[in-house]
Image (cartoon, rainbow, N blue to C red; front, side):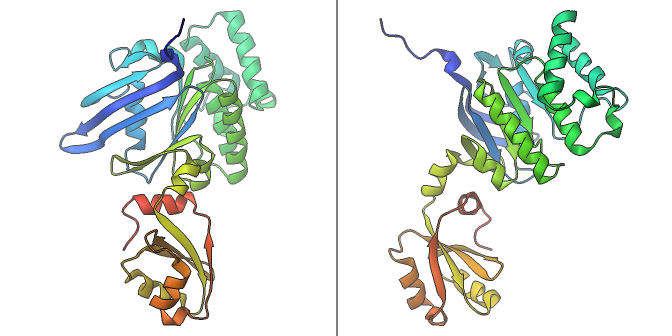
Length: 314
């Protein structure tokens, strides 16, 4: 007997979601599908609608229109039922400064209705997993940014959520703590947890299994990072030459060029793919590039971001 795909294989299904505040559209007709076990990223600048999208998907905000199904629950109608199955880590640290690490975890476990013995075991697991064992009696107000971040993630996963929402969780920590944090996310994903994370860091976005690029409440692109880089419709040429500032301005006058940006002693130039041989075309179009050092290079997510948003031509 053949079986159709069970609904739990999709963690989030949203169709034509709009969220208005007065006349302002914070979310403008967003549709997305997030497979179970996937790390799905929202990449975009501050104010583009990432946090509003997360709050709407969790049921904290009611959509103006559209359909949202999260773990089989209709949102916002079933938001209360959903809350027991999700974890949510906000951008701003939101635990209690005057409580210890252990007390914060105890409080979170009690919110989820854990029995005394189960709660004790879970706290020990979380303290070990997130490197907080030696800090269990430490009051939160005396902790570093990285330690607070680990505690936030430990708290958000106390209930072993099927789905974890993270709203710019690494914005206040250093690169080493960010890297360690992502190792924990990969561990959670490997155990079957679906993760939806917002970020404005390009290197973090590349780590996601799937990625949506947002701008002004709209989704400009959606797919695997590698696929987005291959499908962006431009070739990327790096140029090493003299007088880069003046050269950049001249390049931007060419219709065939999407954008140009200086990286140290080089210019990174995005040229539309209808130009068959971009380096030869550049030498012909710009005589000053006749002897310049040029090479076609691999696109980055920053290139994708620029090519699909309004940050291209200035």
